[in-house]
Length: 530
Image (cartoon, rainbow, N blue to C red; front, top):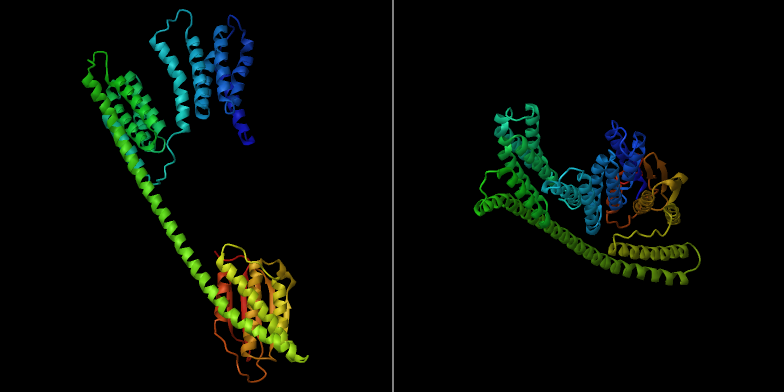
């Protein structure tokens, strides 16, 4: 048992001891025990309740045996034990198996019968019924709480409000004229009538508890206020119907039917009532009708929930199929792009390699070597992108540190003829990886655009710094030194950078700097936007 349950165990043990001390506070000496033994007896009776959640059957058997002992000793602690044994038996019914619970019920029944069988008391049918109910009811209640109705998924409280309002209207309008005719005070009868009606408002969420409450009110009305019996019967039948609708268990439904028939018979059948088969059939039909309606509504709700769940599963399956089709199409497109680009880049790399071996050392040879290495890197990047498209859930492997990618891009563009001034803040290493990788790609694309549109010999400044909310990237180039023939461009590089920055929740701006050059600035937050 987890340690977080220890305070509850201590509370149960302390409550058991305190209950016995309150029960025996005015008790004096008995034939076998002096008054000084009240405290030790309270400890023996109450402390085992701290173990009732761990070993409920064992505690019930102990309390049953101790009840017999205290009854023989004439101790007032037997009254406390009769209460505590019901609590322990309910816990046993909630958490123990059938055989263990039956054993605890038998021990409780025997101990209760011994406790009732005082000298001079005749054991009649009512006595045996009391002992049996005292042993059966707590176990049944505990078992019901273990396997009762599931949580109510519907959040609309309109049916609950209607049940509560209807219940109050039935009880008040049906009984208010007889509130003065009973032996109890008027406010007590009125309060019970209102509580009994309002309890229907929670019947859908706690059907067993409300059914039990209505049964108790029906029995009390039969004893103390006969004019309210018919109204209580109506409320009990409504509670039975709600119970049958919410509890999807035929054994519990049969038990509710038997209990409802017994309660209705107790309330309707009097001493001078002529019991016939026809009247028995009418009574059983009267109780079966709300159960049948409740079971029908419960099955309708279950069918609707099953249909809704099936529709949701179908929608999820359709969505998964669409996603699978999209992934397959993406993979096909990626494979085609890979084949086309890899073919041309591979041919370019082979030609550059062949030319490199025939060309003398010098700028031409260095340019051919750079073309060959760049082509190899492009082919590797294409393979990585193709693998990522085939499995979008996997994390892509970074071949290099983003800072190294920035330096390598600056060196390559410098070798191609640009005058690159790189300012890479070392604090950027502490930024999130996704932000650093995006900054590296922006630097690559920005320098490529400068080379395409401004040409070799152009001065360009690259600043990658740590900002308060992430990273800032600025690429600024000066005026082109001369008119050049611009390289072909698709015009999608800037759009791709905007999409990358927008995906991270950042901003990007690009345009002339007013001095004949061009300025590209991007702000990448530390955390991507939802």
